[in-house]
Image 1 (cartoon, rainbow over the protein chains, first blue to last red):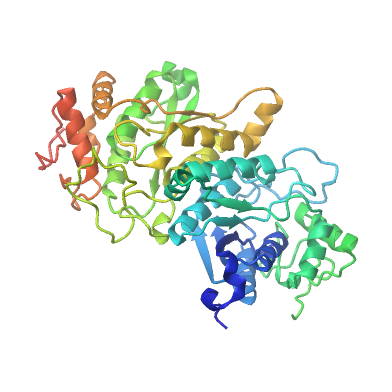
Image 2: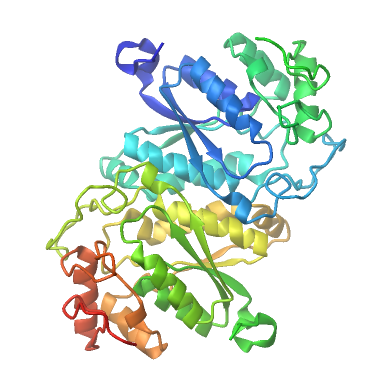
Length: 249
Length: 249
């Protein structure tokens, strides 16, 4: 059924742009925004990622969760190289991710900054002021563009660098608000929140290096953190790397 | 002749990423950066602009000026709409641009933020720390993303949101520097600077709504400001809208 924001109390908070990767965190973020009263436009990026399977997951999730719209925007971050997620560089396997304190090679230069600025542009055209991104600083602090100070800097940029932001400032208001409901949650907290919000977590993917059909590798950082999160939350993961066969939902 | 930054004193400042649109301002910016000792990588964006002729000009200029490399990155800002430069919306003609104080419909939502974040990503991969953009707040203050406060906010974002920025901060250094040599110049100042730096300004284009062969319309804001700048500088413009026939250089 098509979601009609005009006739649905879900839309009372207005329209929000939600970055939806196809992963667990962004799906829970969208559910959180919907629960907070926002009608959500989902935006996904086809940026040359080797785990392109996540784009199919994003489309499935956006539809199942009743996003008003799902936009997929192509950006050729892969042309730059510099990351294991967009080049032939190997995805690290079986790392001791809990004790690593370096920025891993799965870091994609400028990724969240580019995603957020693109979402900001679309939000401005749609006259939306709310953006949401499922970044998380706690469980995995290796990525600089997942930290609160980065998100705050982006919010300043958005309000200074747009027509909507400048016009709102002239009225003494702030236009763009960037919501990061998962910022300070552990992966186990995110799993529990997903359960409470009724997210079909089996429809999400986390693996950095899945097979062509989406089977997770079970050995990359993302697989490890997902498995640990479900385990600590005491929730079975139908998409666990340990039960890699496709599970009917 | 291929530019070799290893054997050229021009490169002593290191490598800089210069946003090169094909217009006058960005060409003068690149010449300024070269004069300051930087070897320049030019980056242009194919963003669905109706004045695509500028991309041909950018390629010509990059080659003529000895850019180490010229990258053209596709980004589909046009898919969002919301601007006269990327949609069927009419480009305003014969406006009193000097006395207008609104943000014009030629504003492209998020454009400079997206361009700068993409340049930041490429710079990080190339291990370059210097970015340059030909924004200008004086002659034409209608665009929010051409103001000093926007550029400062972007510089903060870049240093907080990248691996290079975070690692430099750990050493007590600042990584990214955004150079805006034209920020406080009038268009006449820019023309004079271009003359001094030996820029082939006839190879640049300014018009928002040129013919398919690049002939400027002579009536949009950009044509007006260019003509006024050359006139005030007392410099003939071989690409003037008033002599629209192609001029051999």
